[in-house]
Each structure stands twice: as C-alpha cells, then as structure tokens.
Image (cartoon, rainbow, N blue to C red; front, side, top):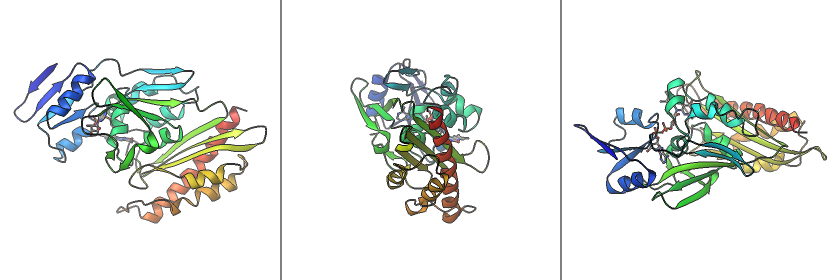
Length: 295
Ligand SMILES: Cc1cc2nc3c(=O)[nH]c(=O)nc-3n(C[C@H](O)[C@H](O)[C@H](O)COP(=O)(O)OP(=O)(O)OC[C@H]3O[C@@H](n4cnc5c(N)ncnc54)[C@H](O)[C@@H]3O)c2cc1C
C-alpha cells in the first residue's frame, strides 16, 4: 500500500479491495474511484474527510465479459472502457449508448461503473438503463464475502443506498435480455455533457408469434429521490400490440402520476413531466423497433 501525507489529508492507495475496506473501517475515510463526482464535492467543501482511499489502481475489477448468463462489468470499468468494449451489436447496446451520453471526455475517461452506481445521485444516467435490464449490484464489506442486490432495490433516496460507508461496489451483472427484447435510453439535458434534467430507459420483450408485449420495463431518472421504476405502467404495456404507438403515448402520458420532480429555475414540475412523457414515448418506440429486429 502507498500512503501520501499532505498538509490537509492522507491519500491511501491500497493494493486490493480487502485492504481498501479495512482502511475505510479504520479511518473516517471516503472512497475514490474515478473522482469525477467526489472531487468536485471535496473542492466545494461539501465533503470533508482526513483520509481518502483511492482504488483506481486496484487490479482485477475492470473486466467486461459476456457469457451465457449475461454481461459482467467490474466495478472499476470506466465509461470509456464500456464504450470501447464492442457491445453495440449485442443485447446490451443500451449500456454503451448510455455511457456515451455521460459528461465530457475527461469524465468518461476516469468515471467508473462502481462510482456511478454507488454515488446514488438520482439524475445519473446508468441506473435507469441498468434497472430496465434487471441488473444486479455486487458489493463487499471485507474484500472476501459479497452481497448481491437487484439495482431496483439498491437505492433508498438521494445519495443513500444499501451500502454502508466501508462497502465497495465490485461488479454489476446484467442477465441476457434475450433475442426478442429491445432496450433504449434517452436523456434531456440543457447542453451536451450536462447531467440529465430527465432521463428514461425502457425494455420491451415481444412475443412475436402473438404479436404482443410479453414483458416491459420503464424507469425514469431525475424525477424523484431515486430512479423510479414505473411498474403500474409496465403492467399496462404487457399484452399490448408493440406496434401501437398511440397506446405507448397514452402510457407515457401517465408518468406524472408517479413522479416527484424537484422544480428548478428554468424547469417547473410540469415542464419536467412533459419532457419525461415525451422521452418515454420515444424510448418505448425505439425499444419496440429494436425488439422487432429480433423477430
Ligand atoms: C462535468 C461532469 C459532468 C458529468 N456528467 C454526467 C452525466 O452526464 N451523466 C452521469 O450519469 N454522470 C455524470 N457525471 C457524474 C460522473 O460521471 C459519475 O458520477 C462518476 O463518473 C462516478 O464515478 P467515479 O468513479 O468518478 O466516482 P467517484 O467520484 O470516485 O465517487 C463517487 C461516490 O461514490 C463512492 N464510490 C466510488 N466508487 C465506489 C465503489 N466502487 N463502491 C462504493 N462506493 C464508491 C465515492 O466514495 C463517492 O461517494 C458528471 C460529472 C462531472 C464532473
């Protein structure tokens, strides 16, 4: 382990995750992966700790692997590595498509999957996409044993998740959504590279013989204290005709019944809800078209 002493704080660079969790337990410390969310908060004085535990150089958590069970992403995979992993021709294409929408080149070069999931800011872009893909988050509190939880049970509120302060996200696993599934993600931000004002992800799995939607997932981000999975609307999509754009529009128009967006100076609750409904209509359309490609 390397430890740097500065006048203000100590920077620890553990050589493995077990050592990182031990340091987090031992000190009033905060974990750093890519630093893209954390360092701005430290600079602004919103987080103040004497010890930083930097795991960005720990080996063995940057794998992007597909097998029969699905896609495995190590917690230290960066947004850029996900984009470059050649997933666009796979059922997981919505993940690199989401990653491309994140921040600027520096954020994508340094920011990690684990940091993005753990940060639990409700406007982050991966969580809705991972939610509609039924992703599961694996984390550890000692580097030896792990817990695994579906991502739609991971968040409790803004910046609050199942994680204890010493626990580290080591992987995200995504089951194969199957050949008849279409998945899509859309975001609205004031400028390219900004955090989402609203984002939406959808998955439609189609029974081509019956020409109906067999399974649906719909999730909106930045519209409440956590990413919001809209199960009641998913139920309305199941059994519907995947080509019925009017029905999808009608379902998307009901989104305001389930959201609690925070109004901002240039974005009222009503404005955010209208954007969410429009984005959801588009996202459901794309998901349906992609499901058709598997027909
Ligand atoms: C200019 C700018 C633009 C951005 N735009 C977007 C955007 O458009 N979309 C988007 O989704 N995000 C955006 N972000 C946020 C950023 O992409 C992610 O939040 C960031 O990449 C998180 O990953 P990280 O590795 O940098 O986490 P860090 O900043 O290192 O950590 C974030 C938090 O998570 C904790 N943490 C880190 N890694 C782990 C882990 N493995 N296990 C447990 N806890 C952990 C840290 O202690 C900290 O509390 C932007 C950030 C900036 C600075």
